[in-house]
Image 1: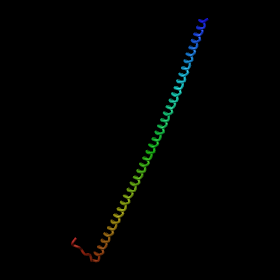
Image 2 (image 1 turned 180 degrees about the vertical axis):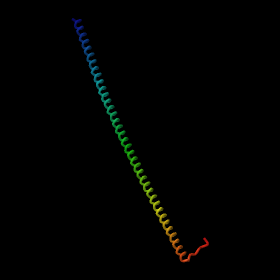
Image 3 (image 1 turned 90 degrees about the horizontal axis):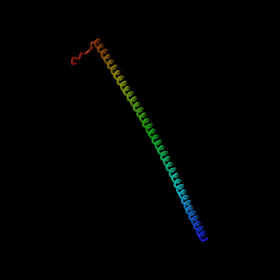
Image 4 (image 1 turned 90 degrees about the vertical axis):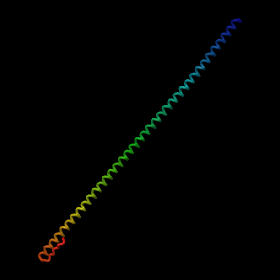
Length: 145
């Protein structure tokens, strides 16, 4: 009886020990699972943040590239406009210079024509006077010339 009692007690202790061990293992397993879940959650969050950061950076880069492209286009348009204006200004100036030159030449030609006409008229008048003097006999010959 005593032996049976002892065996029963040992059996009970063994059972309790086994239950305690199982409980401990279950607890550890649960803790490990919680740790893993926590770590997975953190990793997922970090991954999401990293992805968002990357996307934000890409958007910023695209926006920057777009702005730079627009600035470049504006600058090119401005330069083209300035070049066009310069060209037009030069053409206008060249046209004016050409016109001024032509007007000056025309004026000179007109003056020369007028002077030639006046010279011819003087010559003709002198000839007439000479003729008249010859007829009258008052013509004086200048021997000094």
